[in-house]
Length: 226
Image 1: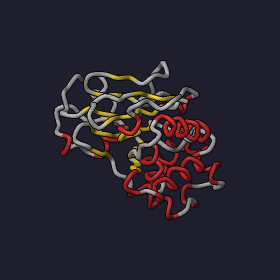
Image 2: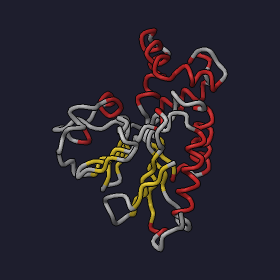
Image 3: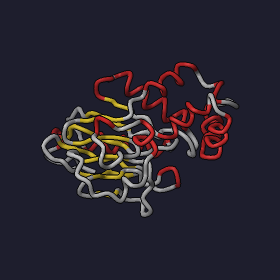
Image 4: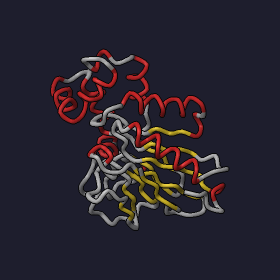
């Protein structure tokens, strides 16, 4: 796709749930770079980099390399799959739940048999991931927020795991909520007046989606998919 005349005004590129889909991520990053040619955007990953797909290790390698090269311009948020991986280190029930929901593929990708065998620096990185990012216009988060509670009073459990009553709420949060976590059924981003859902089901064989934002426009200028 050719870059638009306003490409240099692209300030944020937000990528939905990847779930180990390395080739989709590589192709999507190429599309985003081509579209925003001449810009130096801030990349935001909405969590759930891992599980279900064939190459979570490769996804993490790319994302961490991007972050190491330009830490001020790459934000990686925690998702519920990163969260349950961390829980699985201390709970047999969480370990069983994680393995049943794509964790086994993640372990295979790293060539290990247990989350305790994952590199310690990687576990530390997962544990340090923030739950949200607020740019004053948009609030970026993995799952959503609990309606009726201020954005500064949200709890980790909701930010990483909530579905209802968030998904059916038409609350005005004072920000556009940009989230993932709940796959759309048609493989397309769900843009509403108060939120946009960028989980288009990459973990289930559907597209991986990025939304590109300009500094002076609340809604994305374009959504790209692979």
